[in-house]
Structure formats: C-alpha cells, structure tokens
Image 1 (spheres, one colour):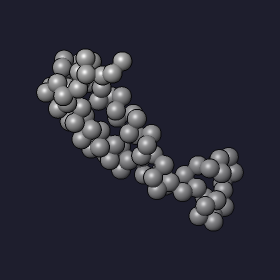
Image 2 (tube, rainbow, N blue to C red; image 1 turned 90 degrees about the vertical axis):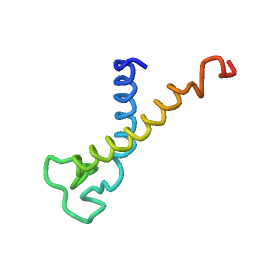
Image 3 (tube, helix red, strand yellow; image 1 turned 120 degrees about the horizontal axis):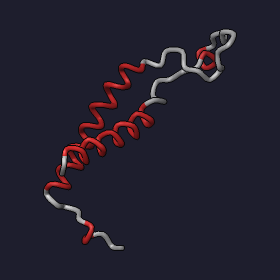
Length: 84
C-alpha cells in the first residue's frame, strides 16, 4: 500500500469515526435544565469536549486502520474473492 493511499484511507476513517463519536456525552442546555442564552441554538451542546473527542477519534481510527492495513497487506480479502 502506498503511503498516499494509506493516508487517504486513514483520513476517511478519521472523519467517519469523528461523526460517530461527536454525539457521545453531548447535552444541550435544555436537557440540563439550564436557560438558553440569547443567540444560541437550543440544541447546541453545553460542553462539547472536542479535544477529548479528537483524541478518541484518532485512537479508534488508528486501531481500525491497523486492521484494514493488516487485511490489505496479507491479502485476506481481494477483489477476486468478492462475489460480484
């Protein structure tokens, strides 16, 4: 696998995992019983903890990428083995 292809796969995995991780632990002011400040969306999270979510996303993406890399390098799944 070329490093550019590996980087592209990791980048795509990172974004997919980020969108899966973003809702975890997010609570709006309405859910917490707080008043919504003027100009803020009622659904906006109070404390999104984005740096923590970025770190979790990076670790989870690395683990998934390691699996994808292992499968690709050892040729466990090839285009010829797919049933189409």
